[in-house]
Image (cartoon, rainbow, N blue to C red; front, side):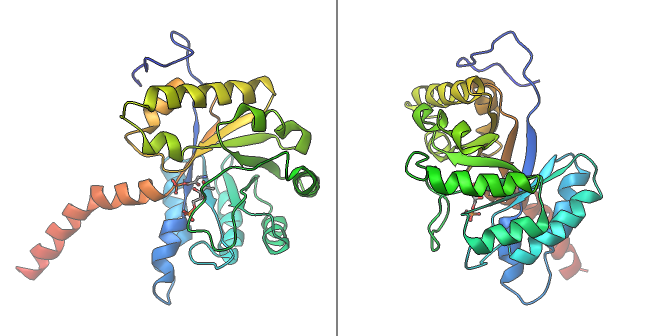
Length: 259
Ligand SMILES: CC(=O)[C@@H](O)[C@H](O)COP(=O)(O)O
Ligand SMILES: NCC(=O)COP(=O)(O)O
């Protein structure tokens, strides 16, 4: 049972479960550092789904430095083996990206306003400024039966515009929360995320969240921010998996060396 956070706007009420979508970008990054399919993105996707994840996420970037377009098709096939699970493909809606998404037909596509060479996603959409583009792209994806989520800052003014694009969900960009977690500013920041979430719910939007969420900061976020349908987590999750398993693997190698 999660502890109730002091910031929870829904204290005393039962929180609906949030779906975990495991982002496999960093598994792909290690794979790409050698020529073979090891570690295999589909193998780790399968492990995630076998162990209770509700879905998997990839964010193929234009330089294909981690998840690649081919991964989209392989993962689309894999989730079919796990009824009720979903593939989420994130990215900037270039023509190349949209063609990959339309071929893979994931349950969800998260549109992110990334520049081609961006290190990682670092801001949400200015929906007012990109309304025409977003309307066209969302219509194209919706026509293919793909639910669309828009990556947004925790800004009610932007979120209030999301329904005009036709998007069904928004994803709150959570780096600011994660960066300040446990610091003096965190209560005020969390309150802003809760207000942004409330705005999304009032607009009838589904609500996702992601970026730099981890085992430490996720629980308080979900207690304080109402109605989060899905979190997508990859970078910290991969590091945490290494931290959890590293010592044991060293122990096994040393045991072999000492035989
Ligand atoms: C859209 C988003 O929130 C990003 O967190 C992204 O999916 C992670 O991308 P990288 O793995 O390239 O940093
Ligand atoms: N949408 C966010 C995501 O997929 C993963 O972000 P991160 O956990 O890798 O920072």
